[in-house]
Length: 71
Length: 137
Image (tube, rainbow over all chains, first blue to last red; front, side, top):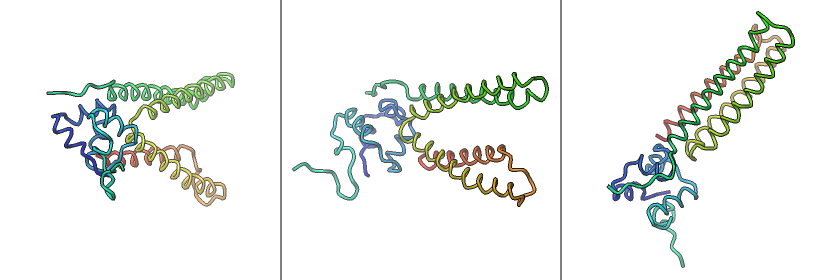
């Protein structure tokens, strides 16, 4: 699964540690998600979406299908 | 800089849980040592049974502290811990049962002491936990 977490974080000038604090996870988890080594759960993806004020599919995309588009 | 506001401190919560777990592990180790070595030097059967009861009670506390620690980890850390536990359980079974059988049929010259299994489990957990942590770094 691809994601834009690193870009969104950089746009806001946040460190991984600050984002980790805001999402209530460890910095290692943020790093693993950003580098594509770990896919977050749905609740964590929702928390990230809420934090950035975006929809989940604007942050996370299925690598095989691209972002989900509503009919 | 526009910084996000943390809802609560994951790091400090985890640190508190690790310290709590450390104390419970230490207490269990001490209770186990009391149970194992106390009767050799001082005690009667009654004191030995009390030491066994204390060891079990502190052991339950240690399990609950461990459960709380795992439950409050984030999802990646929990995954690493659970993978390590699964590997440790598997290694303990596939090494422990044959070792016990070989001891029972005198295939090996040494007694299959439970301590060997505990050492193997500790090493397996440490290595698999280290591997899991480095894998997602």
